[in-house]
Length: 105
Image 1 (cartoon, rainbow, N blue to C red):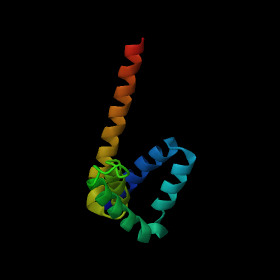
Image 2: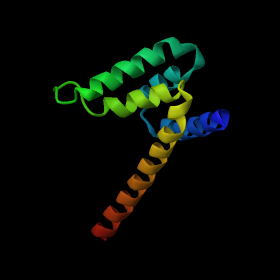
Image 3: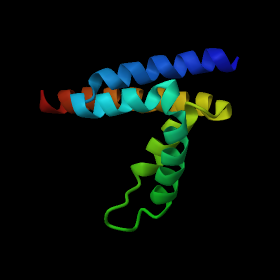
Image 4: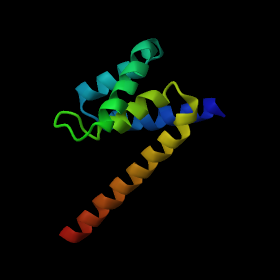
């Protein structure tokens, strides 16, 4: 079950990675490599902690989901909810773009 969830999450992340700018995509691809696990876990934890303090100007709420995304690579029970959240966000984004096009027409 967890191998299937890991494969599904990786497919979802590959799809998102293809839509990101080159620099961001390269960093994400590097962080997702198995050899960078020793960096991915502490960075994910630090991003989650920083996201909790999102009231500060430099730190933002964007850090919380990014930290969860990084941790989901290594923590099996986070894979399914993270993947489901990514799918939901993608569907909402597509729906929002369609509504925006209809309003312009």
